[in-house]
Length: 394
Image (tube, rainbow, N blue to C red; front, side, top):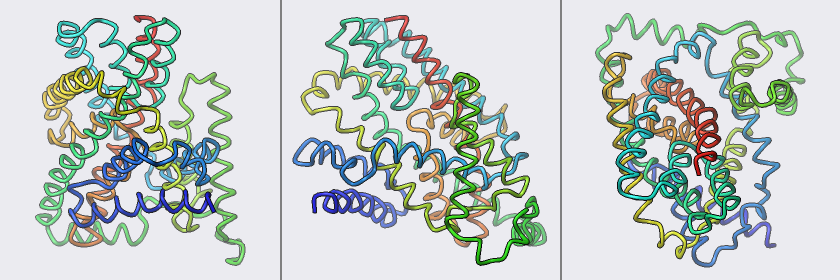
């Protein structure tokens, strides 16, 4: 009974987040609401192992992220992926803006160890936070051990609503742009989408329909995920396995091995995304109100400095890189949370802002690749490099 109860609680938190997002028309993102519920639950009566008890443990999350990233590759073409070099530059330079302001003004306000311990999780995800916590323990700097994970918790809670607001502004701009397109151009976009422009022939098209089962789809996706992880291990981690999963997903889709939107067609996409989100939110159990209370001032000041540096850099670069400042800033902010939050926020906003399916597809086409690639460039690549360098500076 305990396992079912744990599963029920986790799903209730997910459901409440989705409902609040829908009621607020995505002004309050679902991931923000669910994260707050998990924090409050862990700080009160909820068991720390509730997510693992609900079957969403480490092994399941590892499976989820590989399969989901391969799946996302089926939603983009190789051309679209290569076109996102501007988003990569904006996201990385936004991180540089954060580094500059925190290392200058931040070290003037706080001591060196405090700033160095806080920056990697501020510019990256959970992996950076854990690396810095372990590094602080090894150096015997015990009074700052809770700082990296606490930074991860708080900056995510700030990043979700801020990014949601920016994407909503960009979504309204794109919706207006779409509505002002000549009727013939809108019809052409709709016809291209309906006819599957850019799609390739499914190499399994001649296989009888009774064999196109959900298990068959999962076998194909798992094979690509496995190949991606094998290639990543072969490079000794020089290329992040998450990035390879996305690229190989795109290539497998282009050559006809994987069909478009494969996990949704198999009926398992939502299950996997909930499992991955639950595992990420489980990490919020590491901190306590007492730990947070002792370092909250440092965290808030450094978050403000980091976001200001990111805003200045992305705003200055937006026009040269042919983006609105809202889109540029949102790309940079992916460093605060990465995947899958960037995917969920973009999907929610596109659905809420658009007045019809064609308009929603237009918004997704222009925002989703930028957000995903920006998130991979910062969280999956840059944040690990930054954490590795900053460990040597403690």
